[in-house]
Image 1 (cartoon, rainbow, N blue to C red):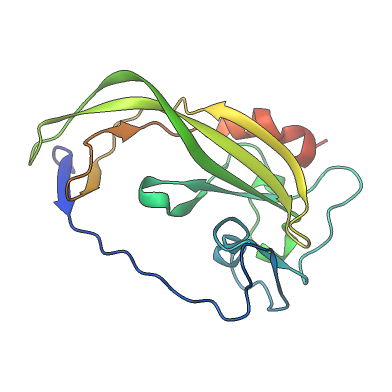
Image 2 (cartoon, rainbow, N blue to C red):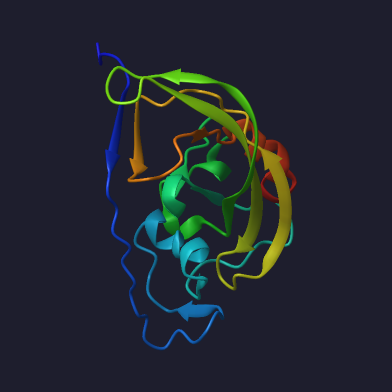
Amino acid sequence: MFGKPRILSMPVMAVVTALAGTGCGGDRASDAPISSERDLQEVCERRTYFTRAPAAAASPPRPIVVFEQRQHDFYSRELILQAGSDWQSVNPNRYQLVACSKRTGEGEKIKDCAFDTGVKSVPLHEATFEVRLYEAKTRKPRKTVSIRGKDYTCPTLQFFRAGEDLKILSNPKPNQYVAALGDEVQR
Protein backbone atom coordinates (compact mmCIF):
# COMPACT_ATOMS: atom_id res chain seq x y z
CA MET A 1 0.00 0.00 0.00
CA PHE A 2 2.73 2.50 0.94
CA GLY A 3 5.63 0.70 -0.70
CA LYS A 4 8.95 -0.01 0.91
CA PRO A 5 10.43 2.36 3.48
CA ARG A 6 12.64 5.14 2.13
CA ILE A 7 15.66 6.92 3.45
CA LEU A 8 16.51 10.47 2.46
CA SER A 9 19.55 12.60 3.10
CA MET A 10 19.12 16.35 3.20
CA PRO A 11 21.22 19.30 4.30
CA VAL A 12 19.79 21.09 7.30
CA MET A 13 20.57 24.71 8.05
CA ALA A 14 20.66 25.81 11.67
CA VAL A 15 18.47 28.79 12.42
CA VAL A 16 19.12 30.92 15.48
CA THR A 17 16.37 33.19 16.71
CA ALA A 18 16.80 35.92 19.26
CA LEU A 19 14.06 36.01 21.85
CA ALA A 20 13.74 39.51 23.19
CA GLY A 21 13.43 39.71 26.93
CA THR A 22 14.05 36.05 27.71
CA GLY A 23 17.26 36.57 29.66
CA CYS A 24 19.97 33.97 29.76
CA GLY A 25 18.74 30.51 30.57
CA GLY A 26 15.92 31.37 32.97
CA ASP A 27 12.28 30.39 32.83
CA ARG A 28 9.95 32.83 31.14
CA ALA A 29 6.30 33.55 31.90
CA SER A 30 3.67 33.80 29.19
CA ASP A 31 0.33 35.45 29.82
CA ALA A 32 -0.88 34.42 26.37
CA PRO A 33 -3.89 32.13 26.22
CA ILE A 34 -3.16 28.48 25.45
CA SER A 35 -4.72 28.03 22.03
CA SER A 36 -3.32 24.58 21.26
CA GLU A 37 -1.17 21.82 22.74
CA ARG A 38 1.64 23.10 20.55
CA ASP A 39 1.79 26.20 22.78
CA LEU A 40 2.61 23.94 25.72
CA GLN A 41 5.56 22.53 23.78
CA GLU A 42 7.36 25.76 24.75
CA VAL A 43 7.62 24.41 28.31
CA CYS A 44 10.15 21.95 26.87
CA GLU A 45 11.76 23.99 24.11
CA ARG A 46 11.88 27.53 25.49
CA ARG A 47 11.52 27.10 29.26
CA THR A 48 8.19 28.92 29.13
CA TYR A 49 5.36 28.55 31.62
CA PHE A 50 1.78 29.64 31.15
CA THR A 51 0.20 31.76 33.87
CA ARG A 52 -3.29 31.03 32.45
CA ALA A 53 -2.86 27.25 32.79
CA PRO A 54 -4.64 25.60 35.71
CA ALA A 55 -2.56 25.00 38.82
CA ALA A 56 -1.63 21.38 39.50
CA ALA A 57 -4.27 19.89 41.77
CA ALA A 58 -3.23 18.68 45.23
CA SER A 59 -3.96 15.10 44.16
CA PRO A 60 -4.68 13.30 40.86
CA PRO A 61 -6.22 13.41 38.39
CA ARG A 62 -3.89 15.97 36.81
CA PRO A 63 -4.24 16.14 33.00
CA ILE A 64 -0.90 15.86 31.17
CA VAL A 65 0.57 16.35 27.73
CA VAL A 66 3.83 14.57 26.81
CA PHE A 67 6.38 15.94 24.34
CA GLU A 68 9.17 13.71 23.12
CA GLN A 69 12.49 14.75 21.61
CA ARG A 70 12.74 13.32 18.14
CA GLN A 71 15.49 13.43 15.56
CA HIS A 72 17.50 16.68 15.44
CA ASP A 73 16.27 17.94 18.82
CA PHE A 74 12.73 18.73 17.71
CA TYR A 75 9.96 17.84 20.13
CA SER A 76 6.72 16.26 19.01
CA ARG A 77 3.59 15.41 20.90
CA GLU A 78 3.36 11.82 22.04
CA LEU A 79 -0.16 10.42 21.77
CA ILE A 80 -1.13 8.31 24.75
CA LEU A 81 -4.61 7.21 23.80
CA GLN A 82 -5.22 4.04 25.76
CA ALA A 83 -4.68 5.58 29.21
CA GLY A 84 -7.81 7.76 29.39
CA SER A 85 -8.82 11.39 29.27
CA ASP A 86 -6.17 12.63 31.70
CA TRP A 87 -3.55 11.64 29.11
CA GLN A 88 -5.48 12.96 26.09
CA SER A 89 -7.58 16.12 26.22
CA VAL A 90 -9.53 17.94 23.53
CA ASN A 91 -9.07 21.19 25.47
CA PRO A 92 -5.45 22.35 25.84
CA ASN A 93 -6.51 24.63 28.71
CA ARG A 94 -7.16 21.54 30.88
CA TYR A 95 -3.53 20.42 31.05
CA GLN A 96 -1.92 20.92 34.45
CA LEU A 97 1.28 18.98 33.70
CA VAL A 98 3.77 18.90 30.83
CA ALA A 99 6.29 16.08 30.42
CA CYS A 100 9.45 16.72 28.41
CA SER A 101 11.13 13.52 27.26
CA LYS A 102 14.69 14.17 26.08
CA ARG A 103 17.09 11.65 24.62
CA THR A 104 20.17 11.34 26.85
CA GLY A 105 22.05 8.38 25.46
CA GLU A 106 22.14 5.41 23.17
CA GLY A 107 22.67 1.79 23.88
CA GLU A 108 23.17 -1.40 22.01
CA LYS A 109 22.12 -2.14 18.47
CA ILE A 110 18.74 -3.88 18.41
CA LYS A 111 18.31 -4.64 14.70
CA ASP A 112 18.74 -3.31 11.18
CA CYS A 113 16.00 -1.34 9.42
CA ALA A 114 15.71 -1.98 5.67
CA PHE A 115 14.97 0.76 3.13
CA ASP A 116 14.36 0.62 -0.62
CA THR A 117 16.21 3.80 -1.66
CA GLY A 118 19.52 5.36 -0.70
CA VAL A 119 21.20 3.39 2.06
CA LYS A 120 19.61 -0.05 2.10
CA SER A 121 20.06 -0.80 5.83
CA VAL A 122 20.39 1.40 8.92
CA PRO A 123 20.98 0.07 12.46
CA LEU A 124 18.39 0.80 15.16
CA HIS A 125 19.85 1.38 18.64
CA GLU A 126 18.04 1.54 21.94
CA ALA A 127 17.99 5.09 23.34
CA THR A 128 17.69 6.34 26.92
CA PHE A 129 15.41 9.26 27.79
CA GLU A 130 15.20 11.61 30.73
CA VAL A 131 11.58 12.56 31.36
CA ARG A 132 11.06 15.77 33.31
CA LEU A 133 7.59 16.54 34.56
CA TYR A 134 6.63 20.19 35.08
CA GLU A 135 3.59 22.12 36.23
CA ALA A 136 2.33 24.04 33.18
CA LYS A 137 1.38 27.12 35.22
CA THR A 138 4.76 27.61 36.96
CA ARG A 139 7.23 25.22 35.25
CA LYS A 140 7.94 23.93 38.73
CA PRO A 141 9.62 20.50 38.45
CA ARG A 142 7.54 17.66 39.87
CA LYS A 143 9.42 14.51 38.90
CA THR A 144 12.36 13.30 36.80
CA VAL A 145 12.69 9.70 35.62
CA SER A 146 14.92 7.84 33.19
CA ILE A 147 13.44 5.33 30.76
CA ARG A 148 14.85 3.22 27.93
CA GLY A 149 12.97 3.51 24.66
CA LYS A 150 11.37 0.14 23.96
CA ASP A 151 9.64 1.00 20.67
CA TYR A 152 11.83 -0.82 18.17
CA THR A 153 9.62 -0.14 15.14
CA CYS A 154 11.53 0.81 12.00
CA PRO A 155 10.31 4.09 10.48
CA THR A 156 8.72 4.24 7.05
CA LEU A 157 10.75 7.35 6.18
CA GLN A 158 13.94 8.57 7.84
CA PHE A 159 15.81 11.84 7.27
CA PHE A 160 19.48 12.40 8.01
CA ARG A 161 21.61 15.52 7.89
CA ALA A 162 24.46 15.52 5.40
CA GLY A 163 27.44 13.81 7.02
CA GLU A 164 25.39 12.53 9.97
CA ASP A 165 26.07 9.08 11.40
CA LEU A 166 23.44 6.78 9.91
CA LYS A 167 21.58 5.19 12.80
CA ILE A 168 18.06 5.20 14.15
CA LEU A 169 17.28 5.48 17.85
CA SER A 170 14.35 3.85 19.61
CA ASN A 171 11.61 5.81 21.38
CA PRO A 172 9.59 5.05 24.50
CA LYS A 173 6.26 3.30 24.09
CA PRO A 174 3.18 5.12 25.43
CA ASN A 175 2.73 2.56 28.22
CA GLN A 176 6.24 3.41 29.46
CA TYR A 177 5.11 7.00 30.07
CA VAL A 178 2.00 5.73 31.86
CA ALA A 179 4.13 3.51 34.11
CA ALA A 180 6.69 6.24 34.84
CA LEU A 181 4.32 9.18 35.37
CA GLY A 182 0.97 7.61 36.21
CA ASP A 183 1.19 8.31 39.95
CA GLU A 184 1.27 12.07 39.17
CA VAL A 185 -1.51 11.91 36.59
CA GLN A 186 -4.24 9.46 37.56
CA ARG A 187 -5.76 8.03 40.72
